[in-house]
Figure 1 (tube, rainbow over the protein chains, first blue to last red):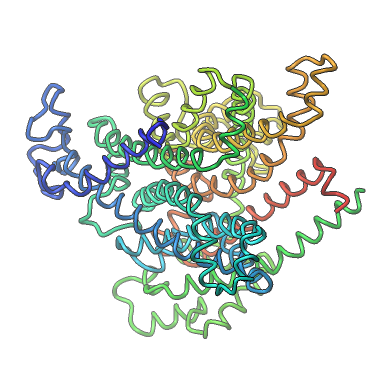
Figure 2: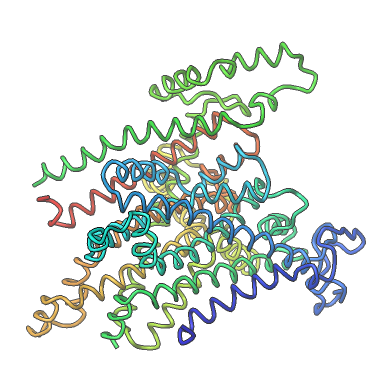
Length: 281
Length: 338
């Protein structure tokens, strides 16, 4: 696994994000919400006119950009982890039920997924959040309620094909219960796919949270997020481009990390891809 | 053969109608459980209880939910999506003004995204095993990891502010007079023979279209590449090679036709995502489309407008998927007999 550059670089970026989020209170040089109206729109410390107390400069209210960036990592990773975990839980449960028992259960679940997927995903999150009101956990809920369909559709197909393999009827003949077959035979075989999907869903969650913050319907006003920073920084783009560029870079690195990790894991797990690759070279 | 095709499509359309009905019910319920009062924003702070009640009655918000839905559905079937609570104008009219702008953006984005994605996929297959393949692969991961709105901001910074070569506000130079016909400016300018205007519309389209196309392309690129690998192992490719047909001709005339099918079914799904992306891209480029309307509606808590916009998004995505299905069926003879 360490031989794959994708997994190493992606995993490294994800680890960096998580560490930043965990250690933000110790790493941040300033209070992320403290306003210093004397020092507004300061450039980064290395530029002329910069102040070493604010390494990446300040925004239009004199808040430290680096500190807000570090605290923003908390929201991003919290949303990414919880949203993808619960989306995985709901999506996997329904996919297993649909793909394993088939028949009318499968029909019903598949139709629900169809209805859900006919809403463009970001639009649906936006509408849901409008109904829930602002707040970090509501953002998570808004992303979960949209993201589970992605897990459900992909995993249902996988469970369906696993169920047709010989080892499932064999386990039935041995008198194993459905629950045991699902837990011991089906899920372990689908695990690699689930891990890959989680990683990709985390990337989606980071982007969706940023879009929602940008639109102004995401978290409480006193929590710094990258999306809010970008929306604020856009207005002062000429005076302090860093207020926009640094959070944009942070989103890019986080999403890149999750994408690389997910992509690398998929390539490692999927023998078909590996085969065509080795045949080609 | 054409009849089986039409039959299959007819069946898909028949499925879409109940789907759309359920979607509208879900949407209605979600929007009506809102904790806020939909008419609160419309009245001055001095309004009395009676004023509020009168306003609620005027918009039908005082009736029970099923009855409200019935009223709305009856209107919607006649093309009347109600009145916007913020601007007090017809939602249908606002949508009719905004939809062409978004559709033009998305259609151009899909076309450009497919062009980049397909050529990238072909290039990756041709360069297989070489450094160039890895380089393209890394580039595509980077392209995918910047969401539409970050591309949009980067383009505004680069080509709008830093190197001011392209316009980044609106759809057309306001000094150009355009007899509004379809709302699709590319078509309107061409139809009225206004070549200068056509070029101006293209220049305004360039940055937003690139912003939505770049994150769209990598998915196409990867799926095409991996299906090219699958097809490459087929018997007929070896046969064609043995017959001495050139590698380029095999790729473009034999393999691409068979490998392109999974890519096409991906386009529909991806295009749905693109509508979410246009939301912020439209705000950044002051594009007078549905995304801009949607964000304004969300900020004003304008329920009838939100409902109308989301429903039109769903209709557009459904139609798009139908078109994708249709092209899939026309291109795949195996499915026609089934």
